[in-house]
Image (cartoon, rainbow, N blue to C red; front, side, top):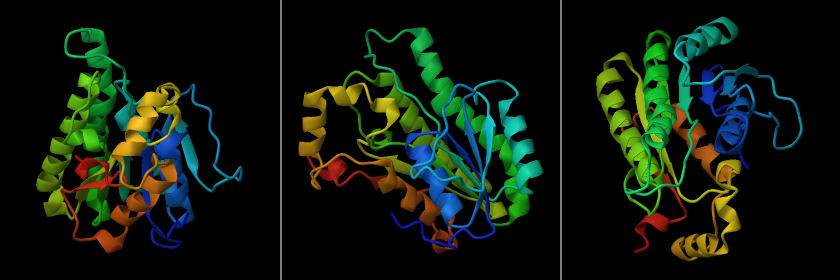
Length: 251
């Protein structure tokens, strides 16, 4: 894919959930576009690159839901990168469960990762983003940020929360030159959803639902993140961009 070489030259970025899937693709695309990138993922994560080559980037193994994680991540970025211009809150999870069967523990875990950690890391990064003078926040939502599907009530709720939170960030932080937007991927093949992809009925449904006739891949998402992080999107804030092959408009 095109990494829009040079689009992020001199920028300093944090990407969470960077060891695999969409986060890995964004992590690599940012580095290829000239940014210095700090990738964040769990201590248990297995890091790799799509093409097997090393990238001139930094990595931090930490659980973003830990109490001290937001400050530790922000301080590490300032120490290793020299500041923060771009924050990509990409890390997320999903657990199956409907309105009747979802437990408190299930609900709290989804919210801790998909919502609370996004807010807390952003709050910790704001001082550095203000110093940037051209700060950018990109949160990973979903087409479920505006739609709903069966059996994933906590996930759907969390992604609606990401949409509202991002819009509020854009309003609150715009005075400092900080933009905030959110990605809305459709059905994308990643390690997170690998077990679901074994369900042929699920895959067939999304192939039919998507006018372009296929499921997405992480490389479909990363160039949009590069655009939002670049000066080409300097007047885009408070927006959610669908990257779903047209699925959300196909009734």
